[in-house]
Length: 171
Image (cartoon, rainbow, N blue to C red; front, side):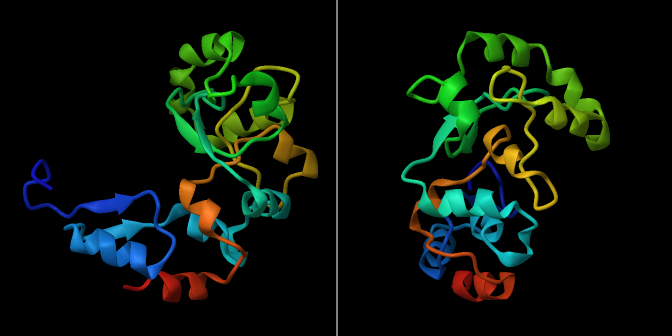
């Protein structure tokens, strides 16, 4: 808040309920960002298997595995790609780290240009873009794409409507 110098501050991370929103506002935030809560809505266009796996996940972890064009840490749940190419602590093994380290230039390309990378992805090769699986993708995409999920996912038990999510998040 001090660094923001009077500008609005939005709190992101760990927002799943109205109590979370109230706590953020009480701490001085101007509002909240509830990414995973809206990922787990019927309107999200997320692959149904992706949503199902989030709901049964027991942990999330940070990794840079899906860093082709985005070599920054991101929070995910496990899949076949992370099982093969991440250490137990979530850190990416050497081959994907080396590939991702020089790939930041890809972030400047339009999404349609980098979307073709997803079709080439396989859990056997360490070439993973940050594109998450959508409902239109084949089921196999769930084991080769980033399954983003914040820690708040561990407190969610169902896919709901976006309308209900807004009601549930209201302070």
